[in-house]
Length: 318
Image (cartoon, rainbow, N blue to C red; front, side):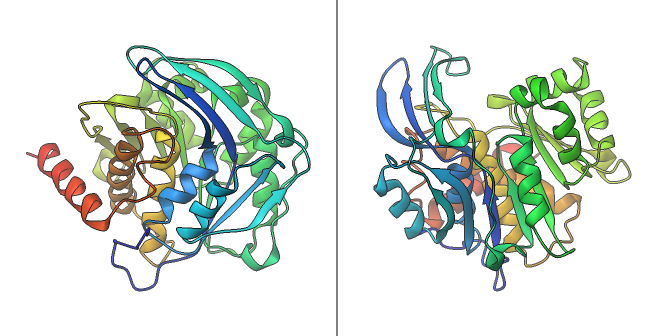
């Protein structure tokens, strides 16, 4: 499972840090409880389809379902850096509305995440590709501080909560990363403008050479060095007839991108590499939306991914 369908012979190890959660999700047509959730869970699983090993960094409580951990391990995700706490796991309960874009959060139990401090084992601290999935900027900085080696590519995600309550720490994160992934609402809030082109430029000025603004069902926009491709790449979303559960689609997008980049065997990524990574992230995210939690992306075949990638290419070019 999770084979490196990119076909590269020297994929790089990948480090993914962030939340590992228990989700309870309700949609207009169905509901499910005790699901695998958390930004790092989705990102590490998605990445495992492109590169190995994928090292997961996070914290779980004494109530965490062991079958979720076993599934990740089957995919080549290492759990040595997952801290086991005596408290209760981080959990999220939410409900999606009819359009599947808007959702209401009913309950967030931070639990073990509240006092968590990142402790990176020395054996994985030199991983050349690092993903700072959604977590407090304080934790993102802790993780970066423990990484060693200069030849490193760092991708990071954030959310509106941190823009509001931890902006100073978030600014420090932005100054130390290579690629930022952020959704359109967050980008507008951070930049103080409704114009996403302006927001992309402002975010790039804070440090990351590349910024990706996610547009939900409308895809994503990449902002990079202006001398290449006018500094912009606009990617649509893969059209789905039915969306079962969009939870984790953005984290899947981030993880698949990172996994693809790691599969290339070096960290000297140019605009075209990031662009190709976005396309693969988009395809993987579309699979996530087809079932609750990670159920759809737990048993994907290389052929399924390749066929959807080809179809997405066919319908996106002219």
